[in-house]
Amino acid sequence: MARKNQKGGATETDNRQLTLDLFYGERVIEIPLAELHEPDPHPFLVQDDDAMTALVDSIRQYGVREPGLARPRADGGYELLCGNRRKRACQIIGLTVLPVIVRELDDQAAAVAMVDSNLQQREKLLYSEKAWAYRVKMEALNHCGVKAEQHSADVIAGQTGDSRNQIFRLIRLTELVDVILNKVDARELAFNTGVELSYLDYNEQFAVADAMEKHGIRPSLSQAVRFKQLKKDGKLTPGIIDGILTESKSSPVGEETTRLKYRRYFPPDYSPKQVEAVIVELLRSWQKSQKNALNS
Image 1 (cartoon, rainbow, N blue to C red):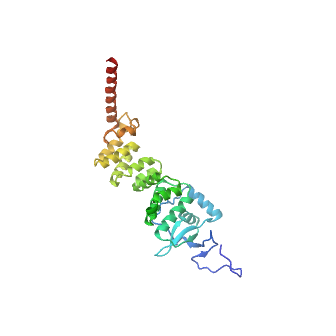
Image 2: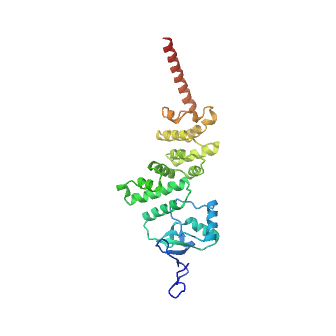
């Protein structure tokens, strides 16, 4: 709503911006949606899903109850740091403006504000959203010199509740190609498996994705660890990737029968069947030695 002047009339406005009441002590203005631009990079997805439908219904009934956050752009318009889902909801409804708080922020402060605002307001986040949010904030904090006094991961951990180790593991997901990262988001690929696959280069990751599509299977955690070790040894090829992923189909002894704690004792290119053969032979030798000891 427009403020009232002393004579009781609305204050003067141009057609571009309407000054609103203060929101927590800051001035709120209505800005045309066409002048609000998404940040680049922007870790948080804007999707026309069930949550968007609920937001549209809420705004249609009550209006935008909390303003977005924006900063002026050097080449005109505004960078919408927080409120891109509200902007989309307004577009769906047919509204043309969005109430926002405008702040003068440098790049690092803008990145931190964008991440913090969205983390506070979004109840559910995809792995990819959290991963990119943490990466953007960590880079911004490091640029500001936080690392010199306290590691930026410790700052984020204290603010979010995620452990330092979990923060680094999440950030590893930003090294995944989209086709694999999307599978982690969709829970079609385990989080820990995705972390291990992130150590492969893009061509190797695409080879994994192609093999998954071709055979209709997904790598286990131990297979992903083997890929990582083979890459380290300079032995990982698309053929080996394909062969390892199809082992569980061709062998009655699945990867689950060979626990990850035993895998470290064997070359990474050993199949579960080869590992089993070695273990069985060792057990036979042990059994024979036990019999000899009893008969002596």
